[in-house]
Image 1 (tube, rainbow, N blue to C red):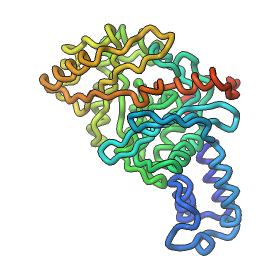
Image 2 (spheres, one colour):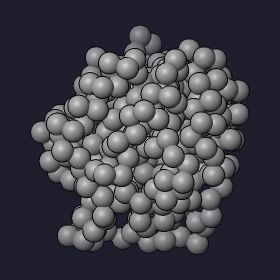
Image 3 (cartoon, rainbow, N blue to C red):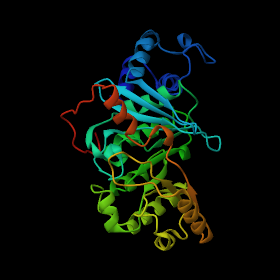
Image 4 (cartoon, helix red, strand yellow):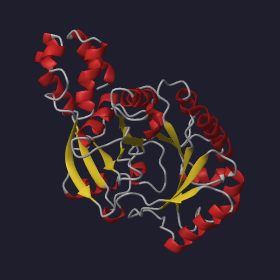
Length: 352
């Protein structure tokens, strides 16, 4: 289901923009229908008010909580089932600087095929609709406050571009999320850089860089667009300056693979409007990559700081429950099978 389907249903029941905005706030912000300065029965057109319980039940049914796994770092991994029996993951992130974050998925599976990612091993199954993305936020807010949403879950947002951008716009308006607290994460795509700059709501940008070497990047991200790290950083820099939000450069640290590129990182990122997030690898059984020694990661952090690169060392949330992207879904499927089925429509599309 797309957000347009929701908007059309509301319009057909006589909703004007103010009515639609209030109804959406109740859903997306998990506000009880009885709450508000003016009772809904005195505010909404009668047909809409009478249909509202059924509408809310329909939207809330877009995703259902299947499994909830808390981790010692304050995060919680959520496995969510969709109406067709597919499933996605979302993550309630630890509180940081008064931001209660949620990581959402934009696809079932992913076509990029990152060699170190569990999600990438299964390929793309299908796209999510914008309403399914929004429903992840609505559900999460019934569990705890959420004032930051990052598109870093299952899927590559630029491969479902128009849908993701629509969800971002709704979250930045009726969803009550500050624009800088909406984070579009991508491996890099020419279409994404163009469209982000045109949006009414301009999210912050996270760029999955992982290496300064074009050849190594092709090996790590085999089906990502063949764009050089230098070009990607230049595009990200231009968007950051236009939006006013620094780029978050994502770098998954892989032992002996990309954890010794200090000089090249300094050359590439010196003077850039951004921060480098070093993320020690969340190991996946069956994949050949390993997490670097913690002291080695900390030493790299210190050296980059000394050389003028704003750098943070961040763990992938949920280390103690093997919570890397796709791992909860794969583990639950192995232990207690859910009906995960591949649909016929699995082609990558920027607009479906």
